[in-house]
Length: 226
Ligand code: DC
Image 1 (cartoon, rainbow, N blue to C red):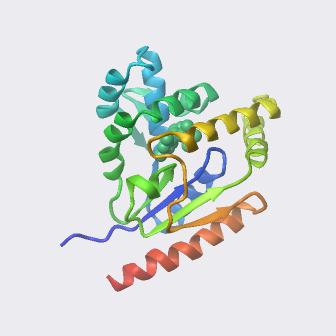
Image 2: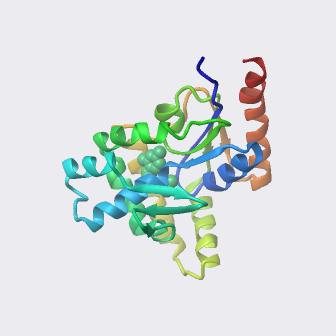
Image 3: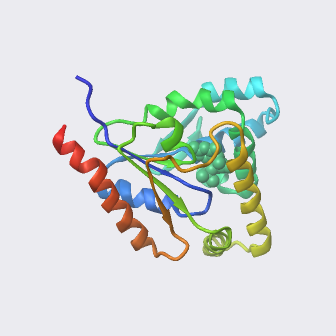
């Protein structure tokens, strides 16, 4: 008998707080966690290293056998710890570029779906609820204005001792949104059955509480019935 694996999807634009929400949800429910953005970032980083960022064929082949692993909160590309290296704006741009290629997305599909294991999964990305886990029991679309997201990003960078220009960051966020929302394949959009949370004026606790109420209603009750 096929077992019901509860999957919670959290989609939304970059810098909206999906990572924070997903970490809390995954700790709260004791579920596994998939950071799909990290996958595209690792692919972008590796592609740049091998000089194949514009070679669709080679990129797809690399995506099919991407030697990436996630262990204890660290991300590895073969034996190299790339946890910090993939978080730069440059690598984000590479990721956005490779993520727009349909064959690359298809090549990464099964790898992502394989994360759906008991006791459950929290999946963070852009198309988790619309493409990768269409049968997820609870879907959330987290949003916030580009200005609010840029301010949050600046705070993050400051905490890491890095300096950044707010106008530049806002511009980069808008450009990335534009690319992610308008690309032909798996564009960023809320699934029709997703709860949309606009976090612009909400605290992380308020976002978390809304999300938990939704998940409890959509997944936990269903788990009891099954
Ligand atoms: O969430 P992030 O900033 O780490 O994502 C990096 C890039 O990867 C971003 O441009 C969008 C893309 N991405 C995607 O297309 N699909 C996903 N499921 C996750 C990320």
